[in-house]
Image 1: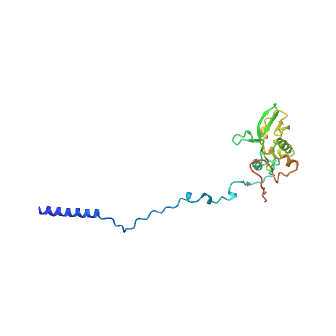
Image 2 (image 1 turned 180 degrees about the horizontal axis):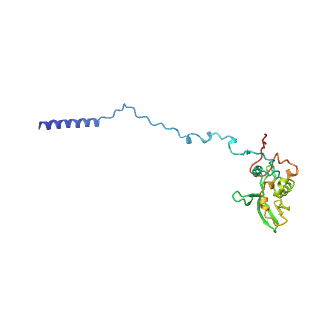
Image 3 (image 1 turned 30 degrees about the vertical axis):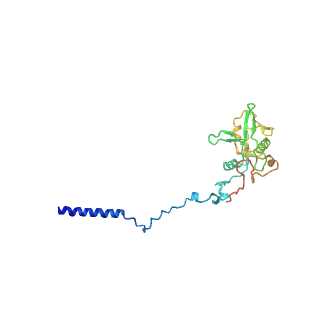
Length: 227
């Protein structure tokens, strides 16, 4: 009995000490854990106006072409170069353009057309198209450009399907193949038949040094390679 009494006394003492510890207030003198520091959100911290605009050179407003071989000319109808033909497609428009997937002739400057006979075709141009010099592109420019093509040997191969042409009105013209010729529309996609301003053709403008067209890019300069 005596041993049980001692054991009970020890257990009661431990229980009482535990109660005192549990009820003791926390020590407020201990410094609290500092908050975790996070990096500021730069997406919202910087005002949109504070971001400087990129330099004009980085806005993608121009294109530079470099090639291993030199082209004899960059003027339409004055060469038979694949490279120069690609350059012409950037600065000039054609009546038709070869579709990039199947090479079928697709209207470019032409809004609509119809066959009058097996050899005569009438074409209507889109209105409001401007050359880089400010002139409006009309049927007179088309006829002048086709006449210009005939004066250069490099482009005659792309003009053989056209026997006769005439202006109907400001935005309408006709082409006559003379005899049925399946090459007409394909020839009209060639760089040699790119349309140029009549005013510059008649004034003797040098299209080799400044090829003026109506394409998406304006010609700036040509730096011929020197060996």
